[in-house]
Length: 196
Ligand code: UP5
Ligand code: MG
Image 1 (cartoon, rainbow, N blue to C red):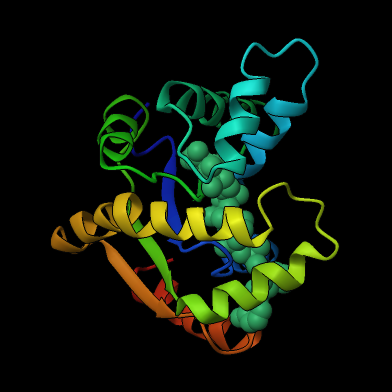
Image 2 (cartoon, rainbow, N blue to C red):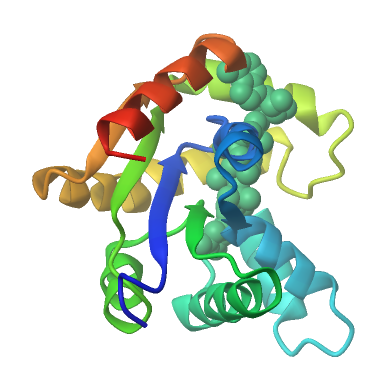
């Protein structure tokens, strides 16, 4: 890989911050390929014959971070497939990296990120959104016990990744508490600022 071959923007933020929602907007308007690490893990968990199925299920319910070997492999496969099948070169990687060693490893073995979009939203609002979504999502982690664990992992383990990118001047931090279309206006402004 080289940066010329694949452009990667990381999309980070707490559980329920709107990563998936805003990525869908950006796909519609800019033609990025959207890869959600959580979605890829959930697919792998469902895949018949996966040796990781039970492990992934347990980690997601407990709000813990799946070992990066698994996640990076899934992302790399998806990037290669999207390039080959759809000719895509610009990627939104949603919900990854969640731990500092994952960030270092991905940028080393796949490609350095261009920058990170970080959606910032208070926990009370995130909790409301996730409990509301939990009424119909079928997601095994949209219950109050799992949500609390996801928040803890986010604060303790995933925020340091954002802080480290911030120190490199590679974060666009966006307040994500307003309505989706209001947040999206700001997203477009930041992409514009970064020359996209
Ligand atoms: N909504 C969205 N925007 C809104 C707004 N501005 N105002 C009001 N409501 C808004 O949105 C969440 C809900 O809020 C939706 O109902 C939406 O309509 C509404 P969504 O866009 O889905 O938010 P998102 O940030 O994508 O939330 P998600 O729950 O997907 O975030 P998580 O980070 O918790 O989930 P993810 O799927 O990324 O990861 C799940 C688990 O997988 C992790 O906990 C972990 O166990 C595992 N994982 C790894 O181990 N490694 C990885 O690299 C990735 C995941
Ligand atoms: Mg999501």
